[in-house]
Image (cartoon, rainbow, N blue to C red; front, side, top):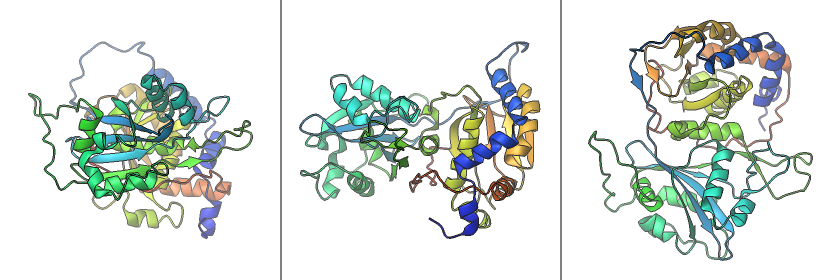
Length: 403
């Protein structure tokens, strides 16, 4: 816990949303309008849009589950490649994570789903997809003894595979640290357009992953309250915002869109100096982004892409909002100043496939939310541990925010 008084008073991500519910009562009506527009084509003229279109980068992923001798889930990770198919990330999925993400009537640990559906890996894969709101392209289940068939030479640089305990987070940290392997990297075949041909198997994906730099990430979790967990199941709840932030950075093209509103890309080009200048409002860009994502959830928006790479000179003062369709402009102009501070809403000159709105945050966002926090005076009560590493941007997020 920080000792900064302003930080203790600062509205948490959840608190900010609560404040916005009161402050934005009228503005929410505009949000409903945006949701309606995003799902309606009535009155829209049929024509050809001549603006150039770019796509979010292709980042192949795989779910790897490790089972113990009794067939129980020992460990689970999602491995994701960079667009060039060399290097990437390993995201550790807690084996006792609640598959309902706290939305179900009862808590159900992922390891229970795995045990119940041991003969059906598709059901396990589906449970992970729904819990994390991502698309998984391939999966495999192996024993600890057979892990070398997937990780190959990477294990030569890992001290040992634990034989008397579960394979834990430290093991995957060692695997990530062992990359890139000193052996010759696996050649990545290209198609007729000089684009990487996706790996056919989990083992092939792992070989490409470990041929380059690898980041290991742990998802933020919290222990459910007694009211949330009446059966006292051994379970943790993955912070939905943190999972969204992680995968919107490393694999934006595979993020699901379960909400009814617009699909949004958030660019947060703040420099370290600009974050520090918030005087304790935010300790990192990660913390700021968790707040933004929570606000987007309030408007039923889907955050599909995130870029937190500092821009040259940091962020500008004014938030720039680029909308894919002119019919979104008026409603966004009404909402934007309340949520983002001083803002400019423009029609995007370049479209991003699957993205309705690109929000490039300005420093006035910090000023606006700092004022709201000071007025609310609520205390941080999320109880979440924002896992380190989510502030780092890989080259998986290559689509610029200044189209």
